Length: 578
Image (cartoon, rainbow, N blue to C red; front, top):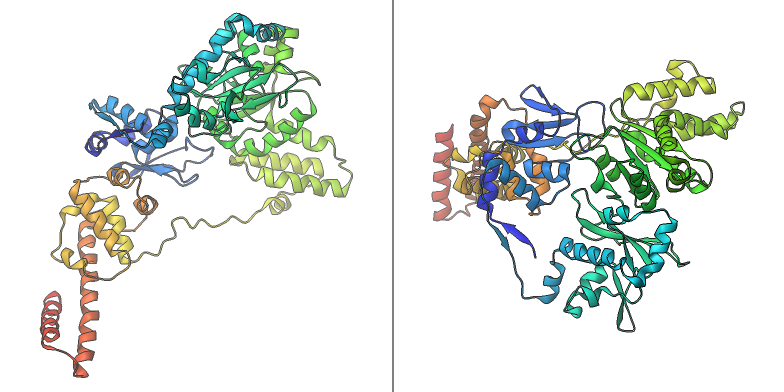
């Protein structure tokens, strides 16, 4: 079931929370003029593009475009839900909140709203318990062959799914009720109206998030069934490109010197068994930007250890393409190369901990590997190969954000292929940057009004006598401006973060967020005067248009008594405003 928190609690939390204090507790931030800036925690960059507008209680990154209020920041930074973010802020502010669970009579909707974490935790427990029974002796034999001891089986809650063992018969009392959710989680299928476990005859690895909650499962066949490994499908809480196996074991208190990235479940478990910690496994062959960003929050150094087979070498090259934009003077990436036929699991068992620690110690920097791999299979005396090298390397090097690393790689590449002239090198590497039209808005009066009321909600206290008349004006955007104005008045808003929260689930939220950081070039001292003047100007311009229409109609002798009175009143108002 969904958990709901009343708006009054959210508004109270936002009033008592200082976004600057929350962000300062997570990242290093410096004052720049009237605002605050930092290196963005959501993407890798060399120059700060992350800005905190203190008076607005709002943040915006001009690099990756992530923006929002303090709730959005916590959700993005901690990778937590909206409710968890509110709960965290409630603890900080000392506000006691009441949560409500919304019930529904619709059975299908009810099933879809079941707490997935709770269900998966129960299933994980049953899989793990099942491996202790006699009918799971084949799984025990397999794990013994892989040199996995009982301590690790319990540590990682490794389980087994036997053909006689069915989730429905062990965990759930009402079978039909839970079939849809278990199908969605990929844990069972139905054949000839008979449900069966999709992970039959497989060693089970519970996949957890960074908070230790089970979000999915991996299964390894102990027979010759294909595929050898399968993972849970994408669900509302699990996406294999966003998560890594073993993230729950990372030291969250003390920042680890590195995180070791391997390919498989057994690699993580075996290395941990030999007391090599802070190891994670990708749930696919290639690391994604989501995984990179997540791992760099815990450490400044990632070390890849791929299998020494052909697939491992292909994966290394593809990794270069994804990881290079994140490399800078603070964040580094290294590689460990194993011999053909080896993987971390077999290496640690055959050659021991000390051998593997030396491998980690002498891991090679990604930039050195990059150059070495590119030139390994190409002949520098061949003009076509030189052209091919430039064609491959230029797009990759241009992805690097750190200017010093980029310059060094350019020079190194130039020396190797025989282009030492700096001007020629710059011409070769020059790429025309795309213009960013994100904030290229036409600054008309309505847009300025909306940006002002969003950025300075206290303007709702300045109510010109024309405000009610604005409702009658047929100008694009005026109704939305009045709506924002009335919301600020209703909820007594005093900063931008509150407005963003009110519009969070409304269709106009993107417009609100874009206008919240629009530069309207108005001096802060003149905000109130400008706001009132624009409203008066819009009203006055509309009156003149209406006046001119009635004058033309009067000349054609088609005006009635009511219109004559309106013309007289408009003329009087225009004269008064002058």
